Length: 549
View (cartoon, rainbow, N blue to C red):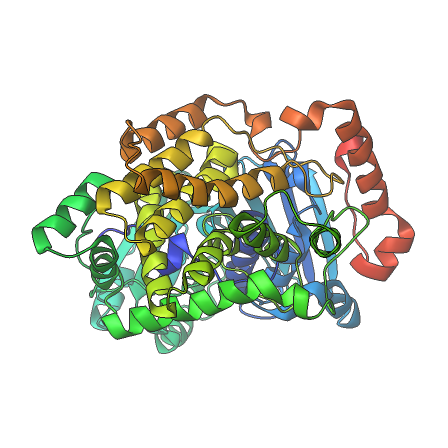
C-alpha cells in the first residue's frame, strides 16, 4: 500500500466538526472514539489522563477539550451535536468519569491523552493517542502494546504476550487480508494486525472464537475516523512542494486548481466528480460558518469570556461609516460570523478548527464584490487545499508545533492564494500571495488567554483574513514575494522547533504572562470549576486545576 500523505479531506480541510478546536476538541474526541472501539461497548467508567505539562492540561475547558474527550469515549465523533450534552448523557446513564493530571510516559507529544475505559464486568482497556493537529490523530499504545495508527483504515489487532506464535499471520493470510504486519513491544509481546478498506466484523468474530477463553490475548478492531479511507487506489503523491506543483501544472498545461484536483484524484482514488461534489459541500459548510449567527442566535455557545464581536460590529456599521469601508468591511463581517460559535453550525478546519471559515470569509467577500460564480469559488478552495497539502507534506502547521504562524499563518497563505487565483492570478502570483502572507506571520506564538475573550487569537485570524486580500492584490500588481513559499514554510517550521514549549498552545507563555491575562485566567478557572456552573453545564468530575498544580 502506498505510504500515507496529506489528503485534502483528511488533513487540510478535515474534519467537519461541531464548534471547537480541531486539535483540542476533534482530535481527542477521535482518540476517545478509538478507545470506545477497543472496549467495543458503552463504558461504565471513563478515566481520562492528561499530561500535567502538556497542552491539554494548560488550556483545559477553554477549547471544549473535556467535551470532546468524554464524547469520544462514549462513541461519538466530532460532528455529533450531542457533544454539548455529553455530561448530562453520562449522568443519565450513571456512567462515572474522571479527569486526572499526571505524567504520561507512553507518549512525549504535547497533545497526548490516555483513556482508561471500564465495562460493567470490571474489564478495563487503556489507549494512548496523540492529537497531531487539524483533527488528525495517532494511536500509539493499546493496553501497553505499541503501535502506530492514524485512523485512515480498518485495523484488526491481536495482542499476544508471547511473540512466538505463527498462527496469527497465517490466519490473516487464509482470510484474504491484503496487508498485515506486526509491532513488537519489548517486555510485553507482539501486536499482529491486518488492515482492510471495509469493516472486518466477520474476521474479528472468527478471531474471538479461535481465542475464546484465553484472557492473555487481546483482540480489537479500530475503525477509520478519516473521511477518505486509504486503500489500494491511492497512488504516489503528485507534489509535495509549491515548485513541484507549479511544474506539474506547466507540464500538463493546466492551471493550479486543475493540478490540485489531479493530486486529490491520486490521493483519494475518488472520481473527479466526487471530489468536486465534496469540495462544494465543504464550501457550503464554510459559507454557513460565515453567516449562521447573523440569521439566528439560538444555540450560540457563549460564556462571560467568549468575546464575540458580531453584535458590536453590526451596531457599529449601522451607526456610522466604518474606516475600512467596502471590501474589508465585508471580510470583517464574515470573520466575526465565523468567530461566534453556534451549536449545530459545523466547522471546517483548515488547519485550525475555524480556519476554513476564516479562509472563506476572505474568499467570499472578494467573490461577492466581483460577482465570481460559485464554481470558481470551489476552484479557489482547490488551490487553498493544494497550499495546505504542501504545508502538511513539509511539516505540521499546528499551534502545538509551530505556534500561530503554523495555524493562522498557513490559513492566511491558503486564503491569499485562493483569492489571487479566482481573480485571475498566474501560478507565480498565487505563490507570491501565499508567501507574502506566511512571511507576515513568521514568529507568531500560540498563546490563547483563558478568559481572554478570544484574544490574542482574534487579532491574528482577523489579520490573516484581511491581509489575504491585501497580499493577493499586491501579487496581482506584480509584487514578488522574493522568498519562495517552500523556503518560507521550511524556515517557519524550523523556527517552530526552537520555540519555547510554553509559546505553543499551553496558555503558559507569551501574552499569557501579562498581569491582566493572569487575572483573567484565574477568573475563568474559578467560573469553570464553580459548583453552580458545574451542575448547570458540566456534570460531575474530579480535576486538579492548573492554578493548584
